[in-house]
Amino acid sequence: MSNEPRFLIVDDFSTMRRIIRNLLKEIGFNNAEEAEDGVVALNLLKNGKFDFIVSDINMPNMDGFALLKNVRADENLKGIPFLMVTAEAKKEDIVSAAQNGANGYIVKPFTKATLEEKVQKIMQKHS
Amino acid sequence: MGHSEVSPLQNVLVTEDAIVAPLSEVRVWGDMSHFELRDAASGSGPGPTDRGTLAPIGDERRPPGESHAPEDFYHRIGQLTRTLHDAMRELGYHEHLADARDNLPDARDRLAYIARLTGDAAEKVLNSVDRARSLQDEISQRAQALRTRWAAVAAYTAGGGRATPAGAALVEETCEFLATLGSQAELTNAILTEIMMAQDFHDLTGQVIRKVVHLAQTLEEQLVKLLIDANQGEVRRKVEAEGLEGPLVNGEDRSDVVADQAGVDALLASLGF
Image (cartoon, rainbow over all chains, first blue to last red):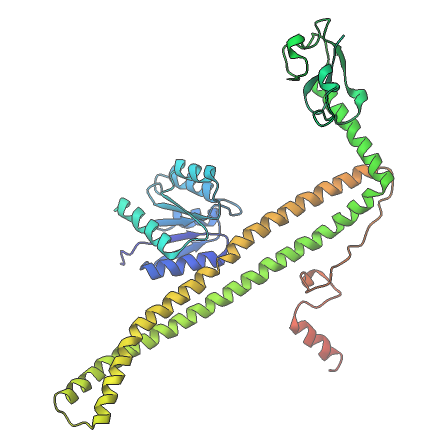
């Protein structure tokens, strides 16, 4: 069984999910699943093992903040690193994400180097 | 004797000095008849030190028994709204509002159309990037395999093996070319990554479009309410939305158009073309 970390990419835009997936592959992480909103993501998280969550904020049904709160409130999921990747650059959102337990916050548009830096930094802290 | 007035919309006390102040400093909203007059000298209004100032309506100096109940406030707002509606009807603005209301769904469809087209375009580019990257990887791998074999031939010719001068030069040149392919593949992959990253415009513009669509929807709902209020007791004229010229954006919902090229072909075929 592969011990390669398994990522969950949550974004309502398929283009962005695909971009993040490809970037992760370039960085060296080939194991990733996708979800189009927080509801689908939470379902996947409860039915499979994931090591890292990369999530947007603005999504239908359940947004990134609600997903984060649900993850942190779940005994089995609360330890999973959670990286916000969003177009929301409002300070209150960034603060709120941090206060609710996000491990990182990237504002779109972003670069491959930024994603790589944040992911590696978070992984080092959790290793 | 000083007077003070209570502006129903600004929630402030306006003293006598403020009333006689230059127009640029005092703005009065709504019907002056709704203002309440109070006597400052009798102690029921602001004192001498407050002359010419604006004080909050919740000020503790408000005389007892004076009515500022929320119902009264809403009643005044209702009167103002009624007046506004009447004015709109008399001036014919409700027809312009109706036109605006009827065009909003079309505007929303067009924005959704833009979002869909840009999304499709971004997906096509990503598909092409994936194919190009796959081909690039295959070329790199084959070049690496050939490079190993040609390196053996180069070692043979350099060691005095049988080779014409032209053959030896060709071997050397081929080895150099194969060696550069690795770095060129890296560069090409970096370019492909840039092209891929540029497709994030779909996400960013899509979010903006989504917000504008939501705004248009809210505006439309408000306009509908406004029109219903402004046309009470009348049969409202149903204005046909005038479609703007341009590409088809919601063909599946219309019976007078075809949805795609297959529809065009089927229609022409049914006509014998």
